[in-house]
Image (tube, rainbow, N blue to C red; front, side, top):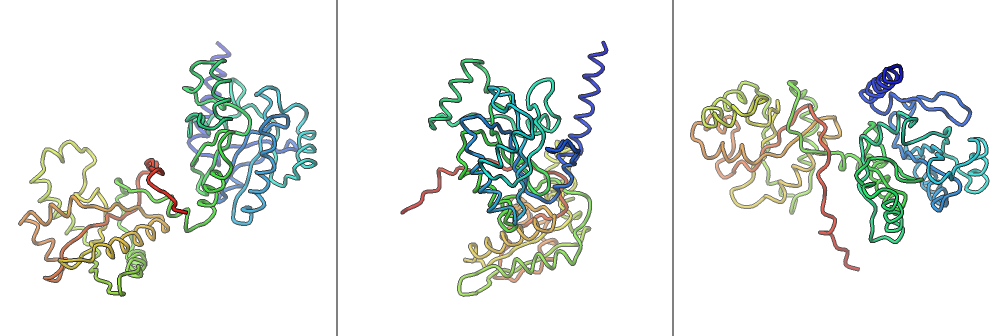
Length: 377
């Protein structure tokens, strides 16, 4: 009974820390002092469980190279020695640290030994594994095939568990504390570096962080922010600098509500199924309407829209490019009052609408098909 109560208390503690995210955890450094991971807010983190007598131990050299290259740009590597895999991290943390500095001259912070699986696993790793589970070894790679074969002999269903599989598993954490990726020890360090580069560079990380947002807070965007965002939009390139677009920013909440009323009449059943429905623009409080000439201008308008969405992302706002509402507005005569308010020139057409507002969700990125990219050398 006592053991059950202690287990429940421990679980409650982990859940409480999980609610706070990564910055709610504390760890012991190599001098047995408590360190709050909140000290690393705003940094890009690569968290690694390591060992000094492993076939992957030479990765220390590669990790140090990454640290030296990107530390000034905000990268921190957090090293947690762990003796759970083949007993390959023996000795005290002092002895481990002396080995690593003597053989690999590591400069990144090294923490006290921990366990990453099982009853005594550190709560940090309970949380990390919950964020990014094991997704498999690359069996086209010789080392990945070897690891898969070795572990499958021990447990035929090892790949269905989120446990850390071996030394030098890595987790990449964004500047705002989101776990972005998990790398197995067989994953190429070049791929790890590419992802780090995308995160430490603020322009690239902004591009990688943008998602289409479909849930918004009930809070209009400040006019000053909308002005900045649209200015970024119209500074997009265009063929011969023609700037063929016309942009209309809708801040009038009543106008959005009135046209939504028409939509609700025409789509009553659909609206009824959506318990969170507020308006026909994914519930966004503001709209950026982009218009182009009746013939042409689509490519230039697309460049403008991407500028707008990336600028919004950098300011903590969410966006979603909408086509469905445009089709409804253009096909329904009852919506003429909305289009009239936009004051679109006669030789222009409404091309797309960008919903914009403060996000009320943090969706994960959808997988991208890298096989569609080929480099012609």
